[in-house]
Image (cartoon, rainbow, N blue to C red; front, side, top):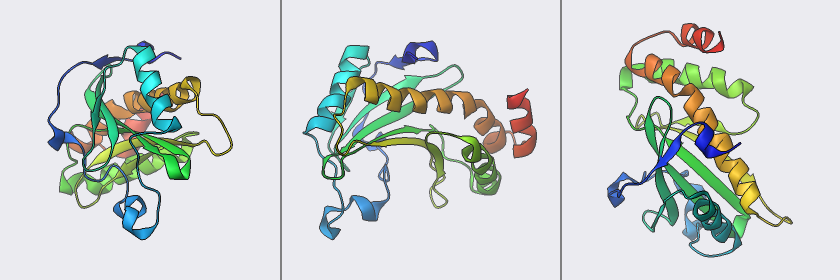
Length: 191
């Protein structure tokens, strides 16, 4: 499935401050504890860059708080930031779609219920919610150990992410900002 079937990348410049400080949990990404670190070069990063280039999807390379490729994606009902991260030492690639607005504190429980119900049926990827920050994001990842990472593999990683994010953004907005019940919203989305 082509990314263009569900939305289009948006070409804009973004301040570095928009990169979430928690694209990954802090402890696994910290090089000081011997865990995998992100990298701005290597076969995974090259495959990520090749995918975006061949797709005509503009990205910016950022280095802080960790090396990533960032871009904006315009879905059917909303626009959000995307981040592609290469964990070369761990043979992993991660792709995040980050919802543009923080979930209000009083709606964290309802949104947590909504994404838990959604995650239960997702074959690939998962939604994550920062309970301290209200950050809401969709994560897909692949392990490429003993495999050649290809543009096609990256396309699957990215497409699975933005298709799911696009499908559930309207429901997320209704639960987080319109104070609707998660079960009712999911019923509407399934109809």
